[in-house]
Length: 90
Image (cartoon, rainbow, N blue to C red; front, side, top):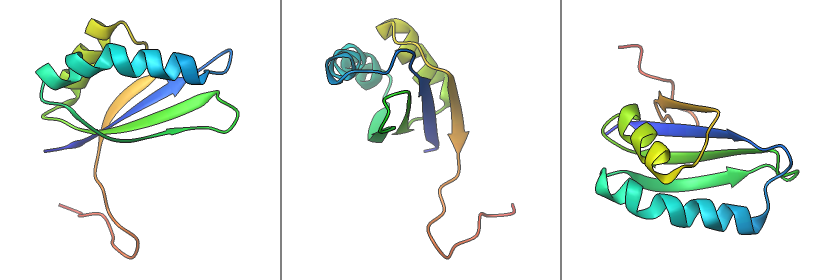
Protein backbone atom coordinates (compact mmCIF):
# COMPACT_ATOMS: atom_id res chain seq x y z
CA UNK A 1 0.00 0.00 0.00
CA UNK A 2 1.54 3.36 -1.01
CA UNK A 3 2.57 6.15 1.30
CA UNK A 4 0.77 9.44 0.73
CA UNK A 5 1.91 12.84 1.95
CA UNK A 6 -0.43 15.74 2.48
CA UNK A 7 1.04 19.24 2.65
CA UNK A 8 -0.70 22.16 4.32
CA UNK A 9 -0.02 25.89 4.20
CA UNK A 10 -1.59 28.02 6.95
CA UNK A 11 -2.00 31.79 6.83
CA UNK A 12 -2.55 32.84 9.55
CA UNK A 13 -0.71 30.13 11.52
CA UNK A 14 -2.80 27.16 12.59
CA UNK A 15 -3.85 26.77 16.23
CA UNK A 16 -4.11 23.60 18.29
CA UNK A 17 -7.90 24.00 18.32
CA UNK A 18 -7.99 24.18 14.50
CA UNK A 19 -5.82 21.05 14.23
CA UNK A 20 -8.17 19.19 16.56
CA UNK A 21 -11.18 20.29 14.51
CA UNK A 22 -9.53 19.12 11.25
CA UNK A 23 -8.60 15.78 12.77
CA UNK A 24 -12.14 15.20 14.02
CA UNK A 25 -13.62 16.13 10.63
CA UNK A 26 -11.28 13.75 8.81
CA UNK A 27 -11.65 10.73 11.12
CA UNK A 28 -14.65 8.96 9.58
CA UNK A 29 -13.87 10.23 6.05
CA UNK A 30 -10.45 8.57 6.14
CA UNK A 31 -11.67 5.39 7.81
CA UNK A 32 -14.46 4.71 5.31
CA UNK A 33 -11.87 4.92 2.48
CA UNK A 34 -9.36 2.62 4.18
CA UNK A 35 -6.83 5.43 4.76
CA UNK A 36 -4.53 5.13 7.78
CA UNK A 37 -2.80 8.17 9.28
CA UNK A 38 0.76 7.36 10.32
CA UNK A 39 2.07 10.67 11.65
CA UNK A 40 1.85 14.42 11.31
CA UNK A 41 4.19 17.37 11.60
CA UNK A 42 3.45 21.04 12.11
CA UNK A 43 6.16 23.69 11.72
CA UNK A 44 7.06 25.49 14.93
CA UNK A 45 5.70 28.72 13.45
CA UNK A 46 2.35 27.01 12.63
CA UNK A 47 2.49 27.99 8.95
CA UNK A 48 3.13 24.57 7.38
CA UNK A 49 2.19 20.99 8.05
CA UNK A 50 2.61 17.52 6.63
CA UNK A 51 0.65 14.34 7.31
CA UNK A 52 1.78 10.87 6.27
CA UNK A 53 -0.79 8.23 5.36
CA UNK A 54 -1.04 4.70 3.98
CA UNK A 55 -3.77 4.36 1.38
CA UNK A 56 -4.61 2.51 -1.83
CA UNK A 57 -4.05 5.67 -3.87
CA UNK A 58 -3.88 9.47 -3.71
CA UNK A 59 -7.47 9.82 -4.91
CA UNK A 60 -8.75 8.05 -1.77
CA UNK A 61 -7.01 10.66 0.36
CA UNK A 62 -8.25 13.52 -1.84
CA UNK A 63 -11.83 12.24 -1.57
CA UNK A 64 -11.56 12.05 2.23
CA UNK A 65 -10.28 15.62 2.48
CA UNK A 66 -12.98 16.92 0.13
CA UNK A 67 -15.70 15.13 2.09
CA UNK A 68 -14.36 16.52 5.39
CA UNK A 69 -14.06 20.05 3.98
CA UNK A 70 -10.38 20.28 4.90
CA UNK A 71 -8.20 22.18 2.42
CA UNK A 72 -4.67 21.14 1.49
CA UNK A 73 -1.83 22.51 -0.61
CA UNK A 74 -0.82 19.16 -2.17
CA UNK A 75 -1.34 15.42 -1.91
CA UNK A 76 1.29 13.15 -3.43
CA UNK A 77 2.43 9.53 -3.27
CA UNK A 78 5.93 8.74 -2.04
CA UNK A 79 8.44 5.96 -1.57
CA UNK A 80 9.83 5.48 1.92
CA UNK A 81 13.46 4.64 2.37
CA UNK A 82 15.28 4.54 5.68
CA UNK A 83 18.68 6.04 6.54
CA UNK A 84 21.49 4.25 4.73
CA UNK A 85 19.06 2.95 2.09
CA UNK A 86 18.78 4.21 -1.44
CA UNK A 87 15.46 4.43 -3.23
CA UNK A 88 14.64 1.58 -5.57
CA UNK A 89 15.60 2.48 -9.14
CA UNK A 90 12.93 0.11 -10.50
